Length: 254
Ligand code: ADP
Ligand code: MG
Picture 1 (tube, protein in one colour):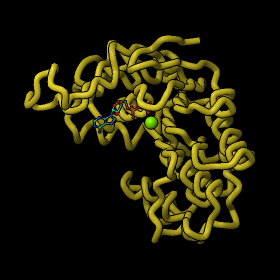
Picture 2 (cartoon, helix red, strand yellow):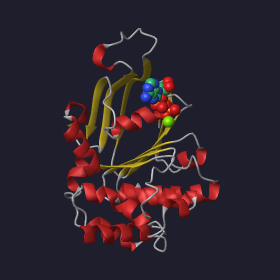
Picture 3 (tube, rainbow, N blue to C red):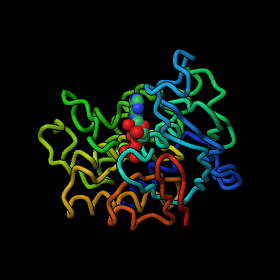
């Protein structure tokens, strides 16, 4: 499904060369634990209002690899994805993005790294309903300070690459679920990130449209690190490796 236009988009990328990416795991979690409700010291850890979501999780995510994250609802999958994306700072442990521990950064610096290096795909797409597909895809490029004409060209090329070249001016409400998720994937790719995190990306889709999305993820995983949380076997089947969580703990990795 990905064609030459995607390769072109990658060669015009804003980041450095690939050598650096090969020498370091794109993402490394070391001894990561997280308790919701524990920040600010208002509650003791024994307080019933705290929820321990992750317990001493360590895992590596090399470039060019799709890692699946499986486990029952509540086992900590989304919490790991949020920690990797720098959307939350775990209460303990390191989260390294290309060698930098992002838990040590200021909020502003962590946000900057996220916008530069991470693409996020959510189960419910999270597109802005009043913006066209093209404008949704271009949105991260606005934040990255890319000039308008370049944004538009890049967004169109990405929509073309996900098979939506003829839907660029459609609003999300005018697209099917599978098409919306492909727009969301194009948006996640817009800044040409090293890492893609996808949280149940096929959870809202039927088997056929889910298959299109999985085909895209497979292509994306050729030269990026992809972490995909799912409890769907078809989705996990595109992973090179599957990490299994139970109760916030890694109980399998292979
Ligand atoms: P999964 O994605 O595998 O379903 P989550 O990472 O969402 O699991 O949740 C792990 C645990 O953390 C669950 O017990 C859940 O109830 C709890 N949790 C998740 N988000 C929050 C939150 N914002 N505040 C409090 N507890 C949360
Ligand atoms: Mg979840």
